[in-house]
Amino acid sequence: AERALQRAVASLPVLEWSLSERHRR
Image 1 (spheres, rainbow, N blue to C red):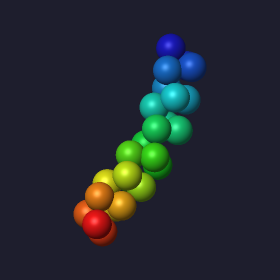
Image 2 (tube, rainbow, N blue to C red):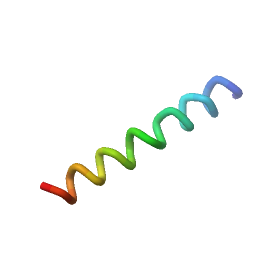
Image 3 (tube, one colour):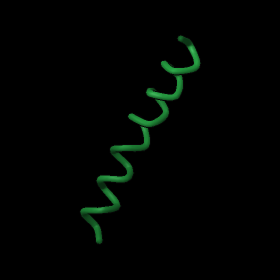
Image 4 (tube, helix red, strand yellow):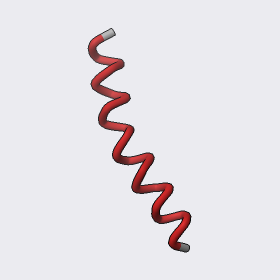
């Protein structure tokens, strides 16, 4: 479970960046 949490935390910034890039374009 801890590993999944860490994975989600690491995916959070990636998702935000992806959204920002998508909105920018």
